[in-house]
Amino acid sequence: MSKVFSRLPKIGFVRLASLGITFLLSISPSLAGDPFRTSNPRKIGDKTEAAFKAIFQQGNYPEAENYLKQAISSEPNEPLAYAMKASLAYTNKDIASLAAYSRKTLETGQKLITSDPLRGNLYTAIGHFLEGSVIITREGTNGVPKALSRLRQVYQYLDKAEAISAGDPELNLLKGYMDLLLAVNLPFSNPDQAIQRLEKNAAPQYLADRGIALAYRDLKRYSQALDYANRALKATSDNPEIYYLKAQILQEQGKKEQSQPLIKEAIAHFDKALTKKSQLPTDLVKQIESERNSAANRFNNTGG
Image (cartoon, rainbow, N blue to C red; front, side):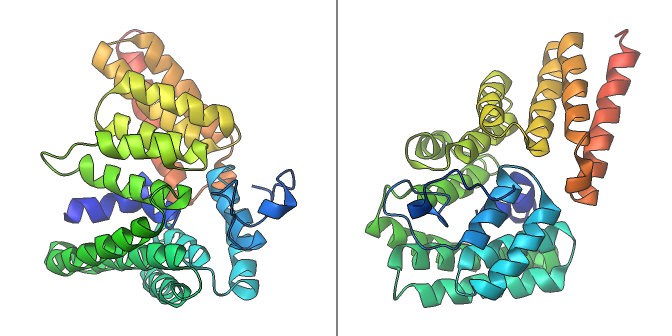
């Protein structure tokens, strides 16, 4: 279970929980502020939505930080903003801020239950999940019992949200990511139901596709992973993190099949990701560069 919580930000749940651009004005004004729903939109807030899209459509973290600063000032009752701030704090290894924004996610989620029970229960669940990640970050394996207690609360509140609207796209996106995270890391777990949840009921679609690609990557089902990565890339072609994801899949598939062309293609996608390294966190850039060098060494040492 400590592995599950420690991998949380890498898989994307914290960032999604959470669960992104320049603020898109092409969407209908009636839907402004809600990146999840095309009908019955919630008043999530334009700055929060802009931050969401800066991260997940463009992979632009400095721009997301700027929007989140504005969101917390002008939209202080929106838990999604605090969840994204918690994610960025983790990325920056700022544990104090991670704890503070995880707590704010929980508090604003609890307050929202009265006016919006669906999203209130959803973000109360996410707040508990984030606080579980704080416990693991601080205490390691010693914190597993506390984190498990949080996980039980997570599912209690998710069940309440699902009872209100089982088909809600925001709920299904976040719960789908969580279920996949657990399924690919725990023995005897089956990810098929989580994948189906993302395919059928989650939105935005590009994030559902990205989550499924991540799951198939971790399950070593590389052809399927590549298919969903390509779908996500088609919709978010400016996001360097999707090129990185595709590069990872190609590299692993190339190693498995002993295919030099696949390794070469992986290197090209690592390079595409690195063309926008100025908008990515420093540690992520280092990781991409390391994996790119590994792929290049493999290619060169096997006669590529």
